[in-house]
Amino acid sequence: LAHLHLQLSAHGKALLAMALNARLATVNILVIVGKDDSPIYEADLSSPGIREDSPHLDQFIIHAAQDLVDEMVWGTSAMFLRVVDKFNDYFVSAYCTAGHVRMMLLHKNRNEEAIRPFFAEVHDLYIKAMMSPFQTPDSRIESAAFDQRVKAAARRHFRA
Image (cartoon, rainbow, N blue to C red; front, side, top):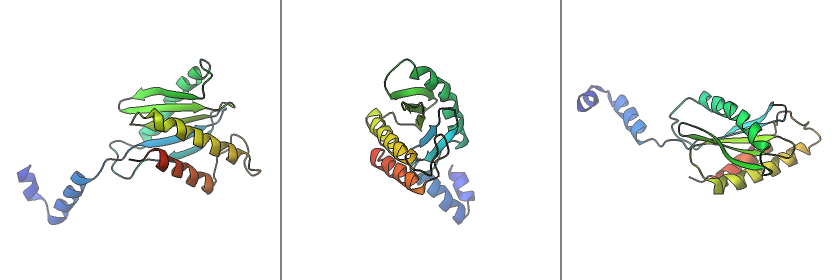
């Protein structure tokens, strides 16, 4: 390593130092899927920092967990389904509304005390968004206000 360090330019040394001191991102990805499996909303609620993997992996993990959510819904009356799937270091927690809209959160830190109230708040925001005369059920939520409120809820519940 010392030999490698000598071969780097000043700019290369600065980049290496930044990379070694950079903080890893806390991954939190929220996806809301309609009852007909159409995507309604997606938000990257991760903290700033370096990701250890490809962001495309998030979509694959969440998509794979949808079938498990569909199975678990019929076995419980609870809306909060807790952790429904695990892939490597990632967990997928789910929440299903009475209208079978599924909210799924991909995360690395298992913290049900924060995830449960986060889902309840997002559910409330979702209901308010659906009450808008400009929003049709199972269509994408494009509202900037909804997006800001979801991100604010994530900051409150998932403080690093």
